[in-house]
Amino acid sequence: MSASGGIISIPSSTQGKAVWASAIIVILVAGFVAGWYMAPKPTGRSVLTGEIPIGALVALTGDLATFGTREKVAIELAEADINQFLATVGASFTIKVLFEDTATDPAVALQKLQSLAARGVKAVVGPLASGEVRNIKGYADSNKIVIVSQSSTATDLSIPGDFVFRLVTDDFPQGRVLGQLLYEMGITHVFLVYRGDTYGDGLADVINDTFTSLGGTVLDSVRYNYEAADFSVELSALNAKVSQAVAQYGASKVAIELISFEEATQILLQAKDYAALMSIKWVGCDGTAMSARIVAQAGAQAAAVILYSTIFGVGYSDKFESLHDRMVAIIGEEPDDYSYLAYDCLWVIALSMLSCDVYDGDAIRLALPSVAENFFGSSGWTRLNSAGDRYIGDYAIYAVVQSGNAFTWTKAATYSASSGSITWQVRI
Image 1 (cartoon, rainbow, N blue to C red):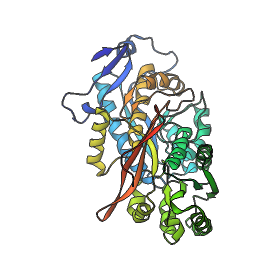
Image 2 (cartoon, helix red, strand yellow):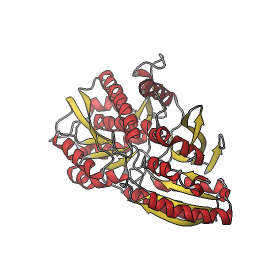
Image 3 (cartoon, helix red, strand yellow):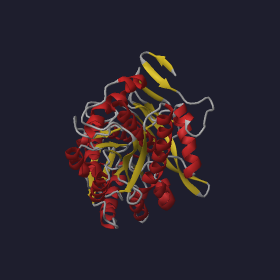
Image 4 (cartoon, rainbow, N blue to C red):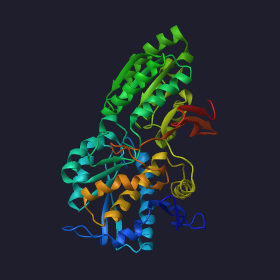
């Protein structure tokens, strides 16, 4: 254990990539462990002993299933690492994660949260989608259940003082990055196609404002029913408008900005029948970036339009590398960046519990911002802003390419929040 600048770092083992030791790089306020033992315990509430249940609302089915499946693995790895850490510091409790499949459905998410609450859960990792978070927020606030989401980004959920925390930045920076990306691609005219929920509405607004402020023109906005199985009506009408735009401005100047989850798979499969739609570039978002379903089922179509997609960018570190390698060994593919955030979500919950030595939602809510500010996770520093969202973050920009007979996501560029610039690694 080494101390520097008033901060204690509990580093990983020199064995590099041992099962838990290489993943544990916990950074806490100086004197945390000693203070935990010496501090008076809260009165009127039970201190932590035994096995403590923590919920995990993950989408194992539905429009974010490939993300949820990966992130479940990340949370399971975090559970094992945390329990090992708790044993090392002599804590009198362990944690047990109770997983529930939300099916990427806000109504199901609420039902599953209520079920977890009945089992004594006071803190939850997830859910993934902002629609889910929005639908459970009232219940979580009323029942003092801490929610820590790895991937909810809707701007209207940035609310100070509630029980919802998000280890990802909200959609204001992502929208600005997407608007800038379109501009730097040489696009002058764009069609916004977005899922009809507050996530889609909010992100579309920010992209619109950013792109137009740079001199671009939004030719049309198509708000679609994301629960539909068929998008041919919308695509047929859009194809006619894109055809006109291509004739007037040129295919290299026109793009589709698709704000979608994995229903983008069906949209792309149907779009292949429309020549104009397939003649221009498409840009996605964090709901499409690294989607295994898209490349498995609509890889040819995605590669044809490239489908540049942004996602919160995780910085390189030893802890990142260790979790990456462990996950790849289990899932057999590259983890999406939100997997690292899911891992860190469980850590900040557990460390917040340890800091106040009580399983109480109100106490965890008060402790969590300070813990997050002093924690270096697999995704980097987890400092939050006053609304309980990630304070700042870079973005990775992925594109779909063909690799032999298969299709895959490749990192094409990165966006630096500090410089406000996009650095291209490969232009496709």
